[in-house]
Image (tube, rainbow over the protein chains, first blue to last red):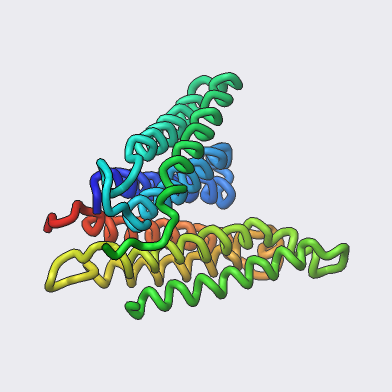
Length: 137
Length: 141
């Protein structure tokens, strides 16, 4: 596996564990009235497991496994775009978490969504050319 | 394809059908099944996200990711087996304990729900510990 895929997939696995733990806390809040306030962690559970976990896992696997290029500065294409994608996605998740726990600021919430749009556009820039037939030469 | 991957993928497809089936019942205009299905929607959502999506990811990654070692190509088998068993029992127990109406069906739903929480969590952590050493640079280990 190339280094960017290793970093991305390991981040995703960490978020999956964190997201599953948050999910367990939310459900415990449903089961035990003493922990009812844990139900409020639901939005954080969704963001960690869906965006930090599964979206990131998919991106890392795609970077590793999609067809590569026979020539060029990198066999993996525009690696810089992929780095922007993963950087923006993770900074977005961290900022979402900080905003959720500390600030609850609407403007910061908007900034998080802008970061995720940047991540999505960068993913498109990186992956579009790699969705092609395999090159055997 | 390894046997545990086949189990992950086939059970994932079953959960997908169940999740969509409950959504169809919940969308039904009225009737007793509609009222029950509405309460089952959180469980059905997790049929989709945990039962289908997670199991697809777990099964396919166990099959395709780089080998762990020559003696144990796919890593510790007991870890991925534990993940499969814990996740599936956890999801089913959740289905039969999360919705409020179960409290009038049988006693001890709270205990069953807590057990389902623990099992689902163990399922995720066992998978994470299993797959971690297989996420590695080419030529390492």
